[in-house]
Image (tube, rainbow, N blue to C red; front, side):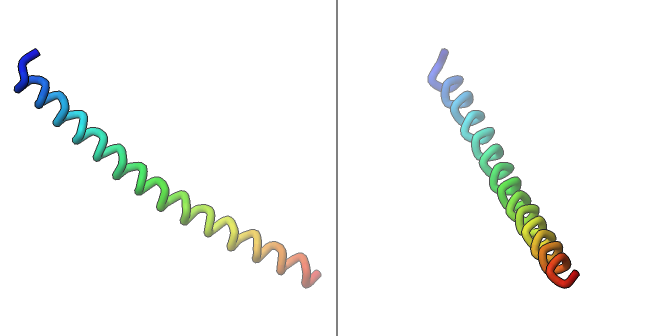
Length: 52
């Protein structure tokens, strides 16, 4: 493999890694929003049961 080809392969790997990390960051943000919504729903259910 030539140095130029190796550089192309490493560059492509770097770009794919960056895209994966960005996707992971977005997924982590959505996960946090889901957990927050679930916690909010649980609190509402707990308070609703206390008033019965």
